[in-house]
Length: 296
Image (tube, rainbow, N blue to C red; front, side, top):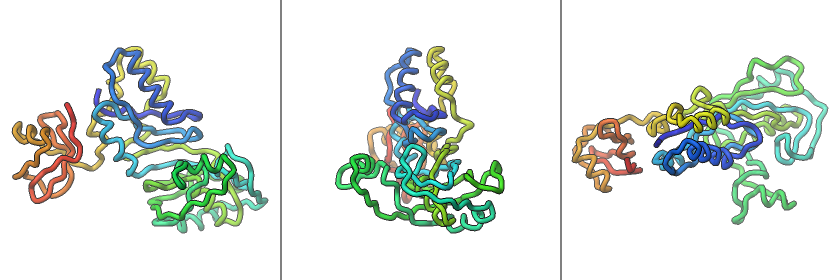
């Protein structure tokens, strides 16, 4: 049970609550106690792909924080809220509604490397406190502008021509705030807006085709069938090749020692002894050193 469960997180549930649901499913199935952690926060008002790492895969969960994400989201025009989503209070309104052609014309300005100001209601820390805690306490929160990358941004085909709202899909780098993107697109169109719908369709190598609902999670837990939905530990290492080891090489890596004479080009590898992951290693000049070791 060392690997990944990919949840299709429903609205209204926080990422920590989703991890608790996985722990309950493990207990109900009589599985051994394991470390469990998620690979990237998904807000309660967002649904979709939430990778959950089990056992030794938790050592790789942090890597997903650095991975690209894909979101579908709807901008509701006419009202901007303090939280930039439907939960907040209105702070600006506009009667202007853009056309589809106007939206299409402005999207290239938000593709590539752009700068954005994160939402005041975010988990970023300001002088040691979370920005959303300061904002909820009535403080004026000013966050620094930051560079992010929007790899692709396009209109989904569910939209008409007279736009009170529009639904887009965005492929973005780590650190991109979709709520800020929606705010800035609306303002560039001469109006205001907020996110009324947000769904993550991909996180790193994991997409909705891998995901199970919480109902299925509970069902598989009770039937002790969670392994049917478990993806292997290496599934979280998108684009990192496998490297087969000899037993003495595996033993050295398990002791944290460098292994020399590896027949591999410089780069990162998932080092295997047979089918068993030994470590995530970095190879330089045919010498391999451990980045993350696995106790398997």
